[in-house]
Every structure is written in C-alpha cells, then in structure tokens.
Length: 437
Image 1 (cartoon, rainbow, N blue to C red):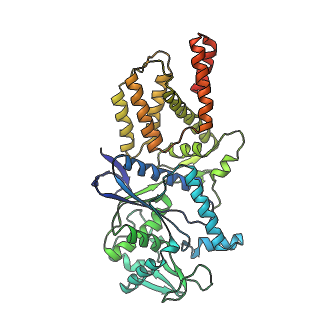
Image 2: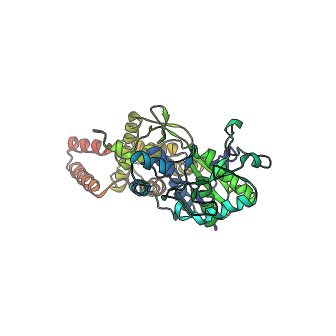
Image 3: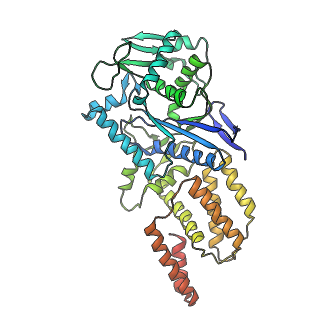
C-alpha cells in the first residue's frame, strides 16, 4: 500500500517507501514546559499519533520518541522556563513538574499512545556537552559574553542555510549552544564554566544517542521549522555531513481571534478552558475530533461555531457506531462496498485527508438511516469491521463510555419492543432520537 506524505524538505508529497521489516524511527519535538499545553500544541500531537497508528496498522514496527524541554529553550537570549519562574514567583522545578503533569494528563485524556521513549533535556546533558565540544574542535563556534555560539556565518560558506524554509538574510544570526548561568538553579558544570545547553543541541543529542545519525520521520509544529529544525540540520551537517531525517513533517498553526495561537503573546486556549464553557457539552473527545477534522497542513481558525459544528458531526459518527454495534439496521445499503473501502484507504494514503475519510463514513450513515434500503448482512459486517479500524484504531476515538452504552442499550431495547408491538409512533420517535445521539 503506497502512502504519500508531504515532506517539508522537498516541498511536495513524497512516497513513504521504507522496508516494512525494519523499524521506523520517528522523533517528534515535545513541549517546553513553562506553561499549560494549549490546543494548538495538542493538534500537532494528535496528528502524529494518527500517523504512528496508521504506520503500525500497515505493519511497520514504529520506534516513536519524543522529548520534553525542561531547560535551555533560549529565545531573545532568555530561557523560557527561568523567565516563567521569575514572572510567577515560583521555583523552576515547581513550574516544570506542574506543566509536565498537565501535558501528560492531556495526552492521556485524548487517548494518545504513549511514546516508546520520552527524554527530558536535563537527563541528556552529558551527550549535549560532547556535541558542543565537537563543534568547538571543528572551529564552528565563537564566544560572546562567556556563552558559546554556533557561527552561522562560517557555516553558510560551506552549507545551504534555509533548507526547510526560505530565510531572510537579515534574520540569519548565530545561535547559543551553551548559555553561561552562575546562579545555583538549573545549571551544570562544564569546562566552559557553569551554564546550560541550548535547545537545538538538545534534540540533536537525543536523536544521535537513541536513534542514530539518520531517522525516517522528524516532526513538530510549523513554528519549529525555523529556527529550531533548521538549526538541528546545521548541527548534523557540521558533525556528520548529512540531514538527520528522510521526512520532515510539520503541522500548521491554530488561530485564535484570527491570530496565531501563542503562549508568548498570551493568545491561547486550553481544553480545560473550553470544558468550562456552559451549555456546550465540550469534553476531551469532542475537542480531539475538532482538532483532527481538518487538513493538518492548513492554518485552522478556532472559534465556538466551528467547535459546535465538529461536535454535531461527531455525534453522527458516534451514532453510526451505535447502529453498527447494536445491529439495528433493517435496510439494505445499495453501495459498492469494495469501492467504499478503497476510498477510505486512499484518503489516508494521500497525505492523511481525514476530512474526506470522515465524510465517507457520514455517507454510509446517511445510506443506513434512509428507510428506502434493506440490509445485506455481509456488507453490514464489513462496514462494522472498518469502522473499528478507521475510527477506533487509527484515529484513536474511544466513542462511548460504559454509562452512555447502558442508556443507549435501554433505548434500543425500548425501540425493538415497540416495533414488535407495531407501536409505530413510539418506535419512530425513539429511532429518530437514536439517529442523533
């Protein structure tokens, strides 16, 4: 089965053609834990969870590794976690512990598969020191204010800078790989004095130690394309003369108030905030559906109306599950079932077109609840099987909890009883209710 995924490296869709017998190494950049995880971050992790699940479904053995940046995320010469601890008047470890828990809790509630390994930046310091030392020996560094910077101006004399994204020459600047820091919190001893490594070096060290010099997929949010991922390539070119990944995949931004969702600009919203909205019936599963029911490469605007639309659509998908599970179909579906299945796979194989996949299931639902058709048991069982494959196994949607199932089963039994007794008015009312639960 041919899978095509958009590769940022080539600016087009590329065929995923790796040996199915060998492990597929995937590295996804995790969060910097200085604030709560917002739904823009979660959109990225949901997409890569689906990608991972689909590769596993296709028989690949996937080695999926992520990181958590708990030190060294330096922007504008400031560390994000240290900056957050000053503003909130809390110790850095309090900030780190609190937001790691928040991150893990959200992933669990969204039913995302746990990574094979999750590495904290602070647990990989020795490997980062070794890399910095190599860069110094290769004479690609310079000293500024007792901190060590990678000399990009020397780098661009030999290598192309801006492989993943075109870069304005004015934005080209040296970046910090070792930040001098004398206070007795979040610092490490080195032969260059006390300090900590920068976040670009962090990911390079994790990939190199746990996955090797070349991986199959490297991904993250689109804002990581530059400078973070570009500067990872810089490290690998200098150290090993190669790009670290065959595929670079990026999930686009989520907008709020027509502006990019961003912690930096305090323009973000978390699932916990959405759940508190009254009369909306928002939960983790609804928001997961809202975040996956779109094109991952397009900018996506978050607003209440779109969330309402997603919840309504998801109710229809859940309703289809109930119909299939309880065998309440009494009508035949005049449909080319093989063609329908092929379409489902085609949409996922063509750069994960989840919108079209969902619409394909909505089409089936419409056919099923139309009273003009009768059921064919063979077709019914096939639809039921592929519902579990695509909706449950690949998209990772849980559908119904135990209490909800009990209520639906009671309604279903009432429906069947009244139908047998030919109480058409009551049975039709219940059927219409079941169709929209």
